[in-house]
Length: 399
Image (cartoon, rainbow, N blue to C red; front, side, top):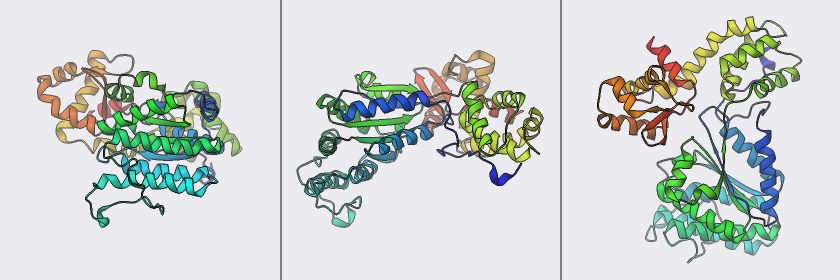
């Protein structure tokens, strides 16, 4: 098969040639956009799932849907070592520009508030060279969104931005990837602002994406967050959707998979979108001709697994210290020997038992792995890998 015409695209956040299995989420979001633009009450949205299920891809697709409707949009990726002010300021600056509000003086006022919000991070006594500006020409508006209290400032900022959007009959969408990495104060402020904005009927929504424990992070911050957001669990694809993710791009290049090959691909990938693209790319390059067969999949599978072992699994494993790797391997063994639950979590006590240690002595390793995003805890006393098939990778490495 011609590698130049290979349609598959394994990459972090890279949109696949066929966005299969997400039609329901896209259709539901179109309803949200229309309702919010008309001033009707609607909840912000949170996407959760393991790594490799396509959360970032779907987040970008939802943002594109908002752009097509003339909304102002901005996107940011949360980081545990960064406060919300700077990335949110850049995102909202882009959103305001996309709105194309006809009254420049009103736009300049909101941009001035946005500048005050951004510069407040440096502190009121900071020298000019220490202050940061998100490329905004408008002068800062003093006394608005610059109190230093992120909860007050964020509400004032979103209120002003939302008013600007309401004038145009459109809306503002803030898209936040890796939302679980927001600091505690920022999460609390964001929840409070979304709560007030939804009550006021302003056309502003937040769409977040994060790991499976993100709902627990939000709930721990504000109890009403369970009702504030619409939660959508993004999981692996059904067999039908996985077949479409492979067959539709191939058909565009005048090629096809036979039925047994599609079955073999689903068995190998588990229906996880990233794995589908990774296997698809390698199998295409190895197949001598169309239709692609199960034999082609069998020949190419070892190379696909090697590439995943280095780029997807190995890069994450390398971030762990020797003590943390020992903990990860014990998690993998506990899942097999002692049993994981329906969503793949194991008890921390079982991990400690595998290592012959007290659970308290393993807390530093567990906490470090949580911070590195290699594991997550959706409920007290239970943990799971953030990466699908990571346990299998660890057991194969040990073997």
